[in-house]
Image 1 (spheres, rainbow, N blue to C red):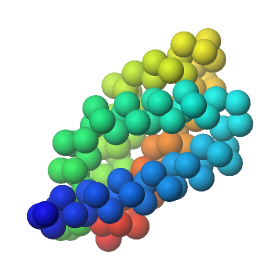
Image 2 (image 1 turned 120 degrees about the vertical axis):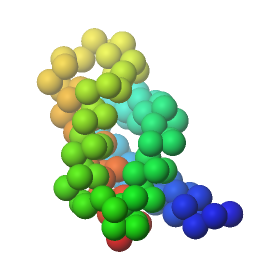
Image 3 (image 1 turned 90 degrees about the horizontal axis):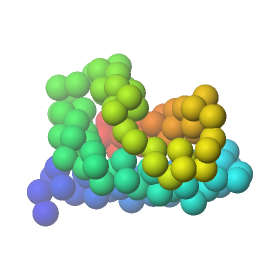
Length: 112
């Protein structure tokens, strides 16, 4: 397994734990939908995440650049499970911001 693969696998392992903690602590009624959308996002973004995580760990991306790029992904992700529940966009955005902040925090802890 290459260093970048090992780093990404560690990232996914820690992220699974941290997202579980976030979802259980912050998302009382919509945990399954939040998990489904987070998993869909990770699958859809796997190659980008692996590349960005590698660049971050090599010092080729700053923390701010990584956070900016991750937050930009928020605009293109489809949160189908949460949207199907008929929740307000403001509420969905609040949940999703927490998910993205968890992803960013875990990336920093694993890559730096």
